[in-house]
Length: 355
Image (spheres, rainbow, N blue to C red):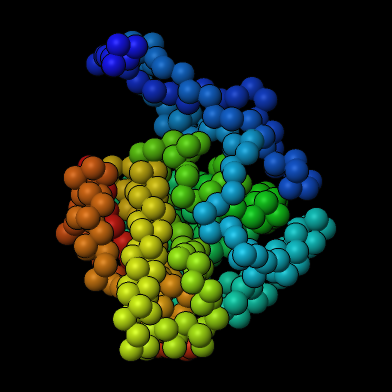
């Protein structure tokens, strides 16, 4: 031990962290390669230097230059999105946005406007909160082309007369980020009644948002869906029919493997949710939509049970470390009338961060 040593540092009581806007922050235009490629600069200032911190200034962060490879980006997982992504990007290049809300998107085979009719079943989560909020910022994790958040913004206007929403978000797929930025630039002028504002929409990994997005900053942090982590134990049973055989097998080895797989999926969901909780303001809400139940229960892409969320609040210390009010946990089925078979076993979760 003779060459080892110890270190101590003290943090000043008056220290306030403020994000320093980069003078060269690039706007997302053209192709995915022209995405904003500046890193977040952080400067420390005392309360005497800062005075009253403008909340808007704290949200003027910059997108990361590189995000690395996501944990679930393997075995061609994101190829599922290639066709839709390419089609939307092609239309975005020509600013052909008029029909975006009436085009089917993704494996669910429903349009954003059909999705909007489902969102109406829990829009009160958003509306009731924003009616009593001094600001109106919403961050969408894994925003895709931004249409899920946009239909929520429309519903808030139509049902609550709420306008002036400032939309933020991230997505892992570069082309979707470009499309989302272009769509919101277009929507700002095309829907003047919404008084819509576009904040930062960056390419980013939803399991590592706190590396560039300010924490405790947004009124609502939501996601339309948590991306699955396919075959987390590398068992080679991604195929639905083969996976069902493992779930129902009497083999102790396979039963144990399925239990361990579910534990990994639980950890994956906890990682996503923890990042979202970190971004929301004290007093703000976190909303996670279209959550699948465990795969061995319903055969859908791997998810978590409704009961898991209350357990997760305690197990991952979201209550004691991140400020979640355990009594605020609320759950609503995604598609109560079960009009769409692919959505009938999904549900939504809301949690509130204590003030």
